[in-house]
Image (tube, rainbow, N blue to C red; front, side):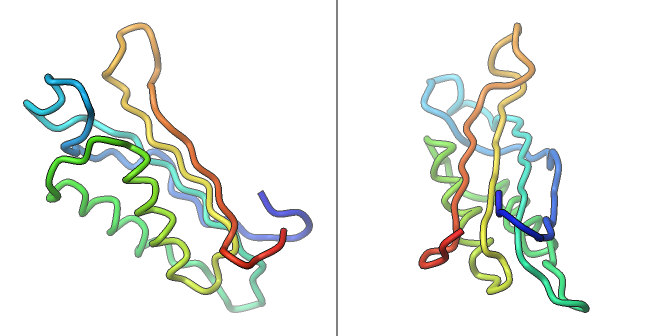
Length: 119
């Protein structure tokens, strides 16, 4: 996502059960979601992007009220990522693995640079 040297803190396929979706059946029970997040930075020796903050934010979705759009959850991911000043860019994907029987997952991906940062 960044050009040149960078470090990515990766959380791959966090599984959570979240009340989300537009369909009537999605209001009946939580959806299983797979969430993956890549947080990018240009780190100096000894610096690191602590992915605990992001994991905790995603797991907390399980206790929230119903959200219709996955994009709303991705906005939360971006806000969490950019709360860390070391994160210059973030890419995140949310998949619903159980929505269609003939797909691995259906979902949305978002990628953003820190506001004001020029890649």
